[in-house]
Image (cartoon, rainbow, N blue to C red; front, side, top):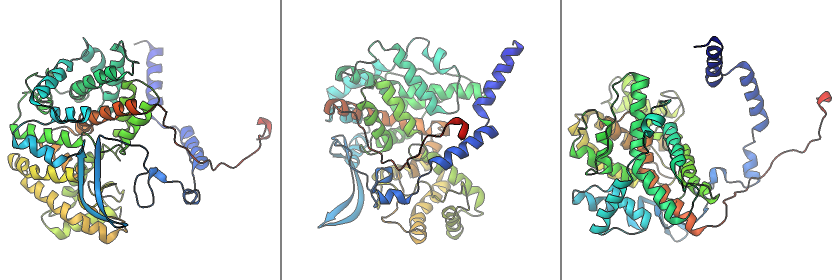
Length: 464
């Protein structure tokens, strides 16, 4: 390599990775001049995080796609109840029982429900599966030229890059008519598993020196089956593995319009931008550890627990570790027991309850019963510890991340794919909400921010 080019390359790498003393000093200047006194939020009645003092979300819109219930009204009093999640008015428990009892895969059927507002007939479902299969293809050389170039450990950024690049191949990228947006959404729903899995395969090869394999999806298989087929070198999986992954995908598809990434979808869609840009924005939101990245933290927390606790079968020792977590003395010292608590649910998260019913079966198949018993112990113990140590306004229970990470771990999914698996499911909900926003709204979403700046006078450069 030319010496000047080499020096330039090294300088660029340094600029991308190192925080210089100058940047550190400027960061402190930024911090000191941008901090806002928390009391001002109360003075001006600003609802931080778009939540009231009780943690309830500020109503910002209407939706017919899904509904969450965590309490019932008794007169003027809110009484916590077991959580309920409904897709298009149908209880998620009934939906899952429907396809599980008939030994069918549910992803495609529930995708149809969320997009079109009704359960498909047998003929409609078969036609929709054929449409998804026909859409499950990438442009010529896309894998080689886009996914294989600059592979990254960060699968969510890789996924975003792939989505934005797909826009370059779409001759109607800016057409936001409902038929065209629906076409784009169905295509993205179909190819997300390929984008995520192929992105990981590229990273595994170039970043870890593992063998490179790219398996084509099969038109005869469900989305869950294809994920396992494409990810595993031998393409093999058990029926139970595919069924549990399928259920996890269904449970992660949608969760009301108020979650961060779905709200992002509404906000960005309201500007009139294209589908690829809206989905990339939603991916950026989901990537955050406070949203879609939480299940990785659960798995890492349990790994740390097994290293830190001498006897994980002893409730007293496990409880002591949980106390250390809350007191910022263990794991990442953030004061959190990951997988516990939810912004809406109090007594129970219906998604966690449904997953829990099948976790034990998978743990038995994978010979992970000892680890399963530890999860079960923490699930029962953590709410009591939290209620004893924290002042909380509502109950605490295991959320969907508590068991989903354990399931992905038992399925042998690499941790880098945990959040992309979430995205493979949630792209369905984002698509439904994008269509709903385009159908019903004609104004850009523009929230207000109260300025707390102090006025000042301009000082010339010489006098500063």
